[in-house]
Amino acid sequence: MKELLLKKIEKKEIVAGVVGLGYVGLPLAVEKAKAGFKTIGFDVQESKVNQVNRGENYIGDVVDKDLKNLVNQGLLSATNDFSFIKDVDFVAICVPTPLDEHQEPDITYVKESTIAVSKYLKKGTMVVLESTTYPGTTEELIKPILEEGSGLKCGEDFYLGFSPERVDPGNLIYKTKNTPKVVGAIGEDAKEVIASMYSAVLDGEIHTVSNPAVAEMEKILENTYRNINIGLVNEIGRLCNKMGISVWEVIDAAKTKPYGFQAFYPGPGLGGHCIPLDPYYLTWKAREYGFHTTLIENSMVINDSQPEYCVERAMHILNRYRKSINGSKILTVGVAYKQDIDDYRESPAIRVISELKKVGAEVEYYDPWVTEFSNMYGESGKSIEKLTPQIIASYDLVMITCAHTNIDYDMIQKNAVAIFDTKNVMKNIVNRANIEVL
Image (cartoon, rainbow, N blue to C red; front, side):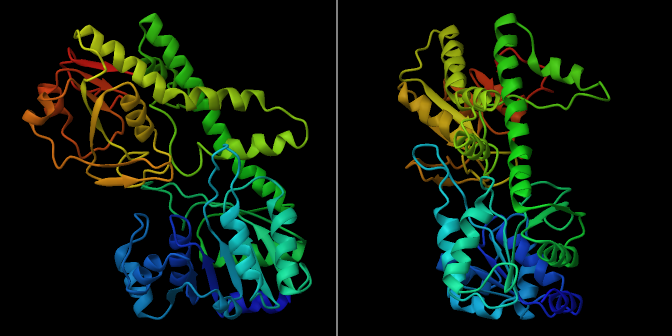
């Protein structure tokens, strides 16, 4: 089986499948097709399937022309019919792994996708989970489901592995194509074949590890590392505010050291599909072993409370203008979770808006990237159409909650009564009488 698959990879005879056509899955499907492998995308959302089949792109990291050309050439198609799994030789599962209402891992999408794949899994197929999850998922959950549903045996009839996604929406340098890839699999043959498949598609280095659990833990470590360091600067930022010191100036000075320091920055909280969620997967799994991840949990407490801290700071700013936050008109600028993208998953800006409303503020937002939003927590909103001097002047406070680069911050400064800049995006503006920075 190994030799046959290696030959099929070399001759570009592998048919690839990607389950989940979101921020991870669609770019991966496009790269597989661009590498010359016929690729089928699977998604339960009919709207995404139809868009792909029409060559209509909806993901920022995918080039519109690439998608359309691949569809027209017959190299890429999409379906919600999982029976076509029987036609593929490689399946990558790239579905969401959110948290439930109790802040515990919700692997429903992973489980349901694996069950769907198992029903049509054929002998000689490679299956790889890319969704971020707790260590042990591939071997404890995915393997039994695939074996039971297909009647096949892992390692003998099909290969199974884990290769964590590394997607950073809006990153201008690192995309799916050139980001190094980690691969862990069950058995040496599986590791060799799966690594060969990724090597045939991607330009980044393929780094193999001894088993899927190592790869699963590696992914959690990447984002927990960031969570902890962001928690550190958020806490330092709160202390600096009390001491009358600019945390931004402190960080700029610290990063002049050429070794032993990496700059992280404070903000209104954590957002995105990984950093706010992944540590919860680790702390949840750690409890199974009677282990308490004290440092990680403390950083999560700091980061999770940052939106409330920003509202507290906004309250003090309004007080200096003899305004109560209850009844004040506040404009938040930016609801995406990071600059210059339309992704608002777990956006701290939305949390800030929610917390402001809880204390009676009248809140509107402006975001040229996110004209409206609706999330899993029942929160929704619609952006005001434009920013003008008159509109800016009509608010008691303007809060910068995302550092988009296509916004006229000079105009905002000149016309706003008061500004709370939680991203230090106005650092180069000279007149700072009405600006307070996080």
